[in-house]
Length: 186
Length: 265
Image (cartoon, rainbow over all chains, first blue to last red; front, side, top):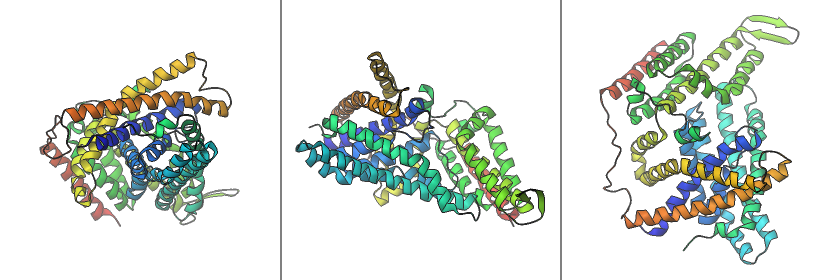
């Protein structure tokens, strides 16, 4: 197996582990429950470093690991979306990768900030949509004929909005001050 | 926190359930999640509840750990229960006080939903309490094998999962060390305004990430020189073994499914 592919697999594995650790750590740092966490930071990093595929696989792996460590599954569809889709789609932050790199090369911090925020927001928004959909499935099954859309949008919004903002801020601070994190080793 | 991260929620033991093959446990829980939805009357919900209690008994897990697993979802459970109590307006009126009225059907649905919630949380908890994350990975790899035909890189994913699980304790240690080092330099992660705390995260992440890249590079080199070349023909250290216990567990679930289908209305 060629070294680059091997490095790709291993970096993703290690950064998925970091994702889980950051997810737990957030409890300690701001005692808001684990949901407003930095779990998306490694996904975004891999998405910028290796492109969309890197981000998608990192997200997918984080979902898989959470299932292996103990997941909350209430219906098959909700479980599938919450664990196999929701984290995976965060990896789509990588679509702005070349824009981030171009801005970084020109040392244009403003443009870099803009694109990092754009990518992270896209990833966070897609995850929000995924969790909301899973929530609609859940409430549809468990809450009877209530207005399940509203519940799900509000419930998931309470943590997804702050989590996305937090991830965007940390990603900007991190990648503008240490852009070498995004560069692959040769 | 360390221990929680290393083993997930795994509690070693030697009960019947602990000794089952991870493949049969995964199949069992996956099928259970589906058959729960067959229940639709008091008898079937009671059957599900008794069945779950039986599995808990056989697994010899202390109830304390199961209740603990309930904590993160208890609010959601209470919320769905109250929704039914207050908003289902069918059947006989049981209780009325000012604007609150509770109907028979609402109470019934509330109890049903809570039972469904409980049995699902308990059953998935039993899986992760009796099976280490690494065994679950091995089991998943085999069960997901059919998806190889759809070009899902099953072996690679399982390899990555094992690497992640292997590195969680190491990286946890490292995170702890870096946090202490930064605290010694006066960084404050847990008090002060949010803005300052978020800023303090960066000097924690940069060294963590840099050393993680170094580790990845070292591991890639190590695997390369040992001639790693993917899944085909690779032998394994941990062997899975399916025996009569596993068949029995699956048969039990089939019997439960048949029972639910007969008793449901």
